[in-house]
Length: 392
Image (cartoon, rainbow, N blue to C red; front, side, top):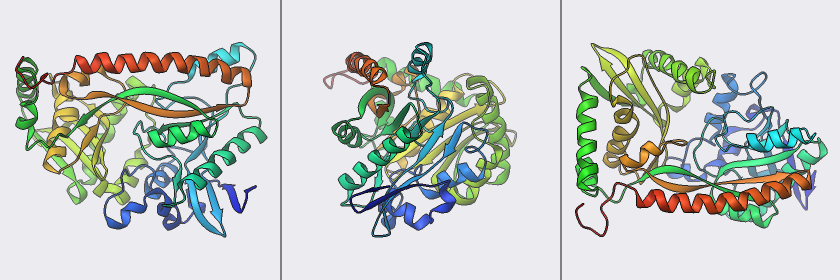
């Protein structure tokens, strides 16, 4: 299959693509430091494959899509065939149910995404200077694969706003949802951040942190070689408890954490609460160039406010100390608002083989966008920050 002089190929997995070729389009900025985010790097996506977190039996079958020009890889996308809608965080269950009630077959579908990772980032990965060409080739190639195989739809989730706008120009439907992010306004420390909040919210957070720290132990922030295999043993227990309660079963396998330790521990911040030398709760974050990405939390003991401390306050502390611009604390959760995380728009793209389904979803997305815009405006107004520079 080709677009002009561009050859489009779907592979059976990342092992078929040299890491250097993939990362040249996924994170070209890493030549001068950290990638913008680690989630589309070869090491992260390959870790999911090697660990069995994606692949046979998971409903996430990898088919990474690449575009080559003159034999050179110029663009790529993390493409998966999906047998369900789990682990995506941009919810299309209602679309699936409606289509199947009408006699259609929604699954399998194609998904351009980072599995189990509700973090915004580039999904159409291109060499610098070839963004428009590479993106158009990837969209055309993915749509052709879906059509040729009788699949219902193609989705690209948690893409950037620029990609969403370009995708809409290419005929895809643009969806806008929302998430809560904390933004560093040049704070010197956590106290400086608190100074930007209203008096009532500032006092509430101080009290919350005091309550959390009264659990009877210590809190440690670990990254790189400070993270030991025993820490992953503890975190696996935390993760299993959370996964079983939230999703029915954990998405990641135990081996995934071993893979992360082997290839990504410098990209990871592990926040642990320990009592008498034993970890009793933890939060796992991934480190980007200017963003800290909160991913998983779990515990084996319940202590008041400890979840908020490990997941949100410690993340802000660490981001300020290391000069990061923002913290993305994962999907959903209006409780984040009172802790300084404000709503921001999240973008995704969608294509449907059935024109009737596409028209129905387009009408839904128009209404949803208006509702999301209003919700963001209202929630921002209820945020914890002082208004107009005055005290409240």
